Amino acid sequence: WHSGNTNPEVGSVVGIALAFGFGISVLAYGIGHVSGGHINPAVTFSFLIRGEMSFASAIMYMLAQFFGAFIGALFLYASVVGLTTGCEGNTADQIDDGANVRLCSASCTLDENDVFGDCGAPFGLGANTVSGAIGQGSAFIAELIGTFVLVFTVLMAAVHKSNGSGPNAAPIAIGWSVMLAHLVLVPLTGCGINPARTFGPAIVALISGTNTFIRGAWVYYTAPFAGSLCATLSYEIIFKNVPTVEDDDEAV
Image (cartoon, rainbow, N blue to C red; front, side):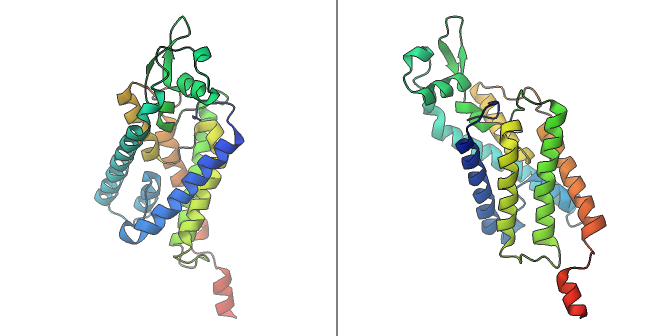
């Protein structure tokens, strides 16, 4: 499946959402005590504008995130590059498996005789592209809201002094927020909500011959920061100092 598909299978969407949700939870548990487990430049941006990080530290975090995404995409490409071996020089009728036909159609060029030609990264390595079913403005709003949910969850579950989840449960809530965003956004935008996650596969796919910097590419590098800003302002202005249930209990 790829984010350009306007009619994704439900099972594919659920599988992608679960993989991202569990993956973020595992990473947050694994490196949260080392670096804070930001993983996402949009999360780092929130800590920067809240004054909890210096500008230099935030830039270093973001560079590490983009570089890590690039290296991860390289490993992914090395793992799946052979999937398109049977595509080149064949037509769809010559390929028996329907799944392989979809793979070839999404990864290879097609000449005037309907013969698959040069193949790039399989499925573009899952690089984000805006679905043809929605406009770029709608994609921007969708990515903004998805990132808002993620960053707001980070702030309320892991940062707020009276959060109900506790430090050991915060990664679960954060993972669920990522899973929720993917369940909704995968059919629309492939669910970026993380500029580094978009950047890594896009660059490696481009190197392999697949240009994913096409319709709506700007959305994935602007909307997450806008969503992060909105979530941070909401937290700072409305929720940061609002009395909690625990505060009420202590007052009694």
